[in-house]
Image 1 (cartoon, rainbow, N blue to C red):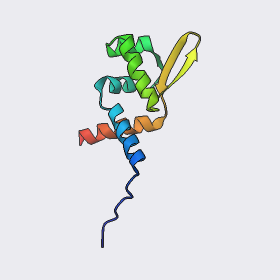
Image 2 (image 1 turned 60 degrees about the horizontal axis):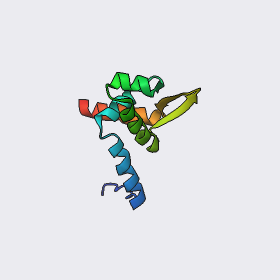
Image 3 (image 1 turned 30 degrees about the vertical axis):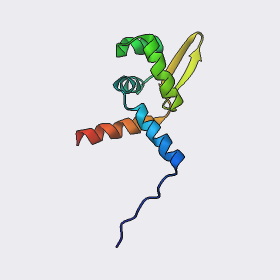
Image 4 (image 1 turned 90 degrees about the vertical axis):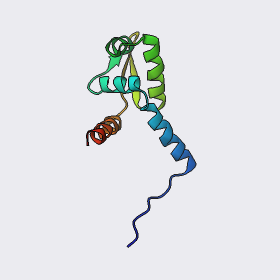
Length: 101
């Protein structure tokens, strides 16, 4: 019996997958995602909790938003950020479980 060989993704899908994994390749971005696991936060709160400047957080949030890992909503002058969906939690939890094996 021959093993099942998965269908190879096309070049665009492979590129997009690689880009997604790059988004997880920075410990500051992982800290931000963990912070957003349970509730939304504004840039100032994220910067304070993560321990980096607001401009650095804004830069990372922009990248995470482009990768559709984070979403935002405006309330008055304040913008709140949260995880885009439960898939983000699943990816992080799976990585954590893998490392703990």
